[in-house]
Image (cartoon, rainbow, N blue to C red):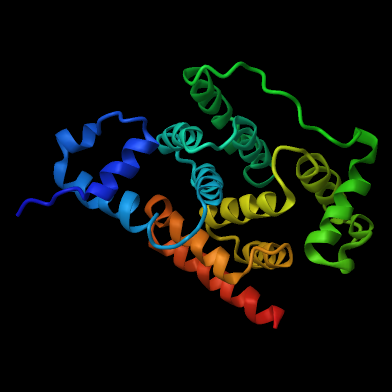
Length: 254
């Protein structure tokens, strides 16, 4: 039985990849048809999620799952859909707080290669907004905005042996990265949620950042739409795990 690629999948793929032909359609036609009908037709047409949210989420998830093969393809496609180079860069930059340099740095040259292929001059403009000496205060203000007033002064709390980690969370994770321009705060919290969801095994953090997203207006329905878009890239287990964490966060917020 021949499995054909739907016209909707063909049209979406053509827009993503500027009309470039699928090599898989030549070498592995059955796989290409099944995958593309799902990833480029069924999934993107499953909801009214906007393309900006979709691509920001997918790019973050690809960094989170360490996909050096698919990330450049989707980064190029994101540019075709109007995602700004600085937005892509900020997704990658922010991931260092959640991936560490050992897993993140490989994505900078991949990203820059995509930019060069699209004729984008490097380096891109800077987006830092906070002086180095003020980053702890600014980062903590964002923690309060995302997670609530109980986070105020969190950098000076906790057992002495781990108190420095709380300070680093305020000054580095939020103060160095979340304060940057290029992405709004709700987008940054979505990026973090997708980075963590893609890694797996970080359920406590995933629930906390699901709550943070909801506090910023990325509600339960929106987050489920986002996670649904990640299924072709992460597979079902991690996406079902992410949805379970969203449900726990929603229940705790009631």
